[in-house]
Image (cartoon, rainbow, N blue to C red):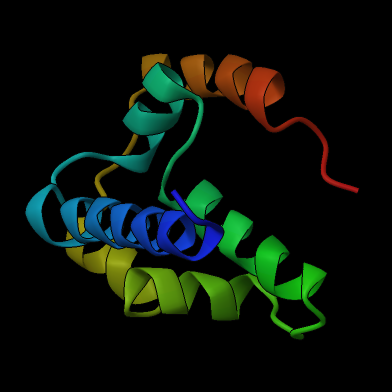
Length: 104
């Protein structure tokens, strides 16, 4: 497979993942994704931002999140996010430390 085709397939897979998370499974909470998989929608938007920045495209965290979510974080939270339980928050501390750690 040539590089262009591989890149196009990877981009299509990313778009399908984004659509699945943003349109089909809005009920799945970011905290549960992070606790189970080590990444969430915010991680995907951060990776998008990092890829843009690596290519010399100025993009901040909020802009990347709005691009990924298709709305502001405040809109997403008010529409889809529920309060995390104490158990979810405790598990998140561990998952975050293991998978993200301190950002520079």
